[in-house]
Length: 278
Image (cartoon, rainbow, N blue to C red; front, side, top):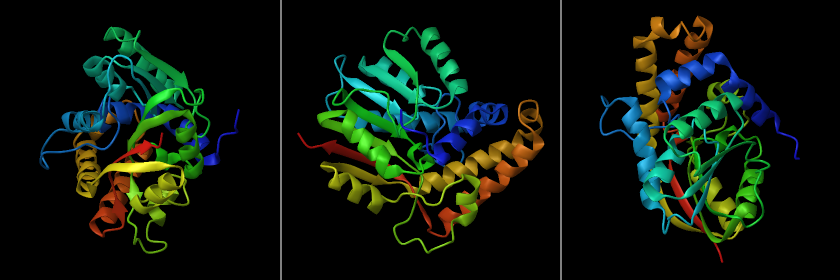
């Protein structure tokens, strides 16, 4: 098995920690721990985060009971349950946090969907799937945690069937982001760079993918980090029962860096939908 990159190993340790598990499930979005798509600044986080699932699912073509979807960086499996429930497809969840994987399996069983959803420990730099075995690769705000994103895209291409779809979101830097201005964010997530719309488009085209749709929604990234920060501060005392004050204080500071970066035009976010050539 390919050795995990340092960035992936750091992400695994982080998301397995009791501090992070309590915070993300309680505040970030419940079953959906990715950036939300909000109707307005006051909408609660959970329905906005679920709208991310609904939006990506609505963009996919030809998904039915015979389709196999691979969710890389699946978190607690909210998207997998939405897909299995609404489309009847099989979903394979690959995720590095066994803490999250255990709850994912419990929620699948509770929903009566454990026969349609398989949860595997693994990472997206060495996807535990056979070549040309997957119809759709799906990912929400996870690939940024890789220290070797070209390797992730190689793996996506390897496991997809010819003509297969790749749909994903990822917190990114803008294509014209000045050098060095994102260092507070990069230091916090133990990375040297972020991707960008231009980076993903170049790398995917070089691997034989064609662009189907790209929707720029950077305002939603800004809104989400701001909303999470507001919820954290409003529920600070309650959150100390599951997360340390040092973790929560650091999180408040870190969320502020993301909001500031978005306000200054240094960050980017949106949905990217590509198809692998037949």
